[in-house]
Length: 111
Length: 114
Image (cartoon, rainbow over all chains, first blue to last red; front, side, top):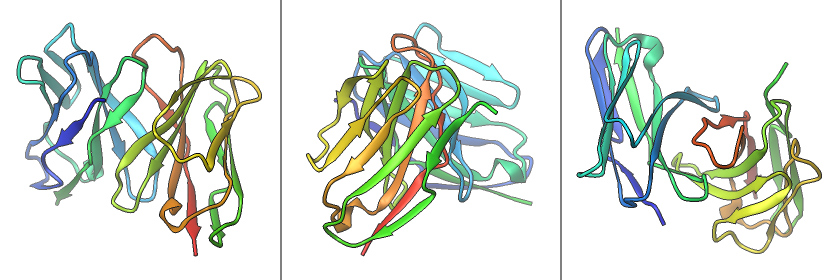
């Protein structure tokens, strides 16, 4: 099955700086890559996704890049704010609409 | 309010007991899921149902059994809990089976097995 590796387990940035979280996947058939955010003590909620027919998608301060050849995708957050502090999970969708998640990156935005 | 609801929030039990968790979504979605999130925050799919039919069973021990009465409800029963079952169980739903739609997660049920 699909294996998703999330490279940074923790990431600390200063408020206003950019943050980048990188993920790789193994299954070339995966075609959908969402990102989820989990704030302390809360459940997951969706932040942004990208499909394999594009290599870049932006939503306000968030940009996702997809490199299908390298089987790599990344989340870029610009102008970080303290409320961006959370655990971010990348995921890849398998053939059965099942999401396989990375291990999470704990992002801390310091004031 | 439309969302994914889970009960109970927490459950503490002894090894060997049976537990049941409930999940209901009022989003009108066709597909529901159970995930397990362990103490290291690792998230793993357990089951996926589409319109009451089991679609995916990801190498889950037999003591776990999902139950779906209709497409809005997906419950999880654990027949004889073991210490490694301690985790947060997250229920989620998505609009359609075939599409790549976002999944909406419930607040989770935290299980502690003593």
